[in-house]
Image 1 (cartoon, rainbow, N blue to C red):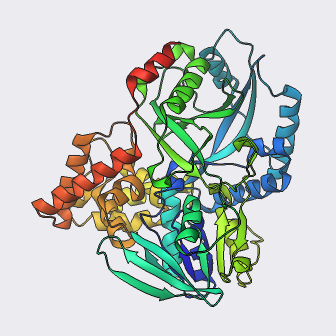
Image 2 (spheres, rainbow, N blue to C red; image 1 turned 90 degrees about the horizontal axis):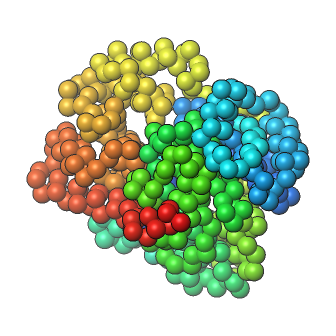
Image 3 (tube, rainbow, N blue to C red; image 1 turned 120 degrees about the vertical axis):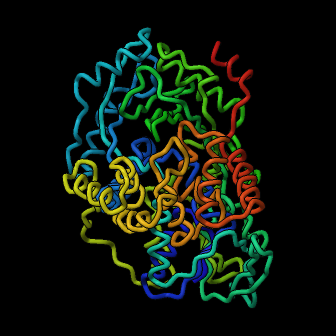
Length: 528
C-alpha cells in the first residue's frame, strides 16, 4: 500500500493499513501535517451548521468520532463550551437553533455541561450593546494542536510496520496496462529518485489530489476538487475575550468562530475559491479585513485593531468539485474516487474529509481496498485529562522523574500523553536537555530531541512548527528563533554552518506560513 500525503487523512489511512498487517509506505512531499491540517480552525466538532444542509448522517458520524477522540486522546482533544450568538439582524431563527441544538445533543447521547451564569453575563457585557443578543450554550471539542495528533498516529503506523517518509515527493504514479503499478519518488533533501512498486496507490494528498492525477496522466472527466481557501487571524487575548468559543454570524451571515487558542484568540474562517498552488495559499487583504471587522463588531469595547493581529494564515480545503454551488453549501463529506474507469485501476483518490472524521475515513478507505476493518464497538478510555485526578498525579511523577517544574511536566503531558515519562527520563541526563526551548516557554529541549529521534522530524520547521509547536505561541519572535536554534544545535552538535542553515530555512518557512498583514489596509477597514 502506497499512501500519498501525510495530512490527518493520509496518516490515518496508513495507520489502518499497517495495523491490518499490510506492507505500507506513507510519503509526504513536505512535512506531516504541514498542509491543510495545520491551517485548520482546530476544532473537533459534529458540524452543527451541517444540520442546516440536511447532512444528518455526517453530523451523526462526526459526533460519534468526536466522542471517541475525547476519550482516546484526551490529552490532545478536550471539551470546549460554545456560545452561539444571534441578534435581531441574524438570518437564523432562534427556534431553528434550539431544535438543532436539541438534536445535536441527542446524537452525543449525553447532556452537555453548561457555562455558569456569571460567565454568560461577562460575555454579554463584552458584546456590542447596540444589539439584542440571544446566546445559546452547547459543547463541542477542540484539538489545539492537530499536528500532535498526526505525530501520534504516525508513530503508531510506524510501530505497526509502516515505512514513513517525509520531504519525499511523488513525481508521478506509474500507470501501465490499465492499472497503477507503483510510484516514482524524489527525496527533496538528497535529490535522489527511486521507483517503488505498490499493490494499491491511495491518493490522500488533499488539495494536491488533482495535481497528482495530472502528473500521472490520469485524465478525469472534470477536476475532482473545487478548492476553497479558508483564512484565519490570530489576536492576543483582549479585554472581555470569552473563555468559551464564540460562534456568530459575520456581516454576510456566514458563520465565524472566535476561539480561545494557545493563550491567544483565533478568528476564522473565510470561504474563497482558490485554484492556485495550495502550497502558496495566503490570506488576502480582504479576508483579513473581513475577519478583523467581524471580531471588532462583536467586541467593540475591546477596541481591536490591525496592530493587534499577531499573524494570519490560510489553507485550501479539498472540497469536492461542485460548479455553481456556494462554498458554504458544498458537502463536507469525504468521497473515495476509484480511477478504474480512467484506466488507472487500484488508484483511489480521497476527496474531502475533516479533522473530526479522519479515523472513520481511514476505515472506509481500508474496506474499499479489501481490508476487513470493523467499526469500533467500544470507546477506549483516554490517557487522562485535566479533570482527572490521576492526571495531576502523573504530572508530579513526570516532574520528579525529569527533575523539571510541574509547569513543564504539565506541558509535556498535554502534548505527549503517556510518552511524556520517557521524555522526562531522557531530560534527566543533562541540564541542556532540561533547558526551555526559548526563554518564553516551559517546553524543553528534550522534547525536540525526541522529535528528531522518534517522530520523523528532519528540519527545524518540522520541530518548532509541528512536533513541539512553540513557534505558534503568543510571544515568539526572531530572537526566540535564534535562541531556540542555538540551544537545540548545542545538544545535537551542529556546527556554525549547520546552525545558520537550519535557522535560515526555519525563518523562511515560518514567514511563508504565518503572514504579517499589511497594516495600512487593515487599519482602514477597522476604522470604517
